[in-house]
Image (cartoon, rainbow, N blue to C red):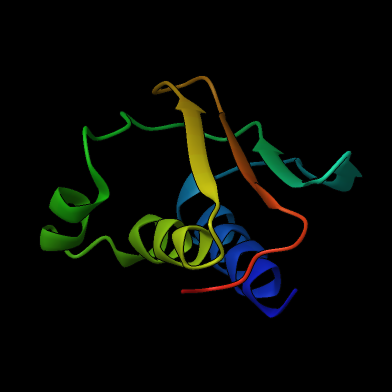
Length: 100
């Protein structure tokens, strides 16, 4: 759960710093054996890069770190965003994950 806290904190910080949103929502639930976190905003959106490593090289660390935290718990971060169209980020991971 600590990683989900870090993911949520990182993504909400991004919304506050970059999105110029007037609304953001958080949905966190369990679906079968999967944890699901969804954060949506009505902000300015952005062009999703092909990979977060290149985003990091441009000194945009938030999404890189959120992806890193998701992968650390066997999860996947998915981003749907377009400039001017807001952003929806979904993180899914196994309910029970044991790191190797």
